[in-house]
Length: 213
Image (tube, rainbow, N blue to C red; front, side, top):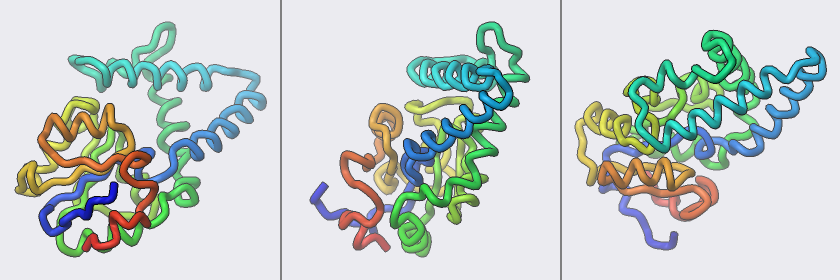
């Protein structure tokens, strides 16, 4: 995207987490290696299969309406929901944390610092973001996850909640994500301008962010 952005026109900048603030593909590759190592050690593919089924379940839920996705996301055929929850917590929430910093998107720390001086910086994620933010060495004024509002992206419920908390309007809000079908669609439904990583910019050293302050 070549057009300059009038950053002063925005009171709230909302970032997606996974794939936006860090390179999700490279982290997943690293985690896959650790997971396979664990499978060899334990001689079991249970965790591998559970995580694969869980990710498919979440993608499916994001494409439609689920009355209670917070509970339903852990209900996988032939698996105990508590065991699924424990596997997800271990491999998707806890174990990646020490690795996140090395996969951080270039320029994100400086951008957060600049934007945060004059406006609210928020994170809107389908997963809990607080521990990941800390692991990345970042801080935000506001965070919201799908479980907080009972809706997965592209439902804009989390984005609308952030705008209400920041006491601002859609016209003065910017969404920055990496998936147009999730982040982009949520922004469009909320009437918010959106930037998509990989389409509009490569990383946060892009000239697009040069005058952000």
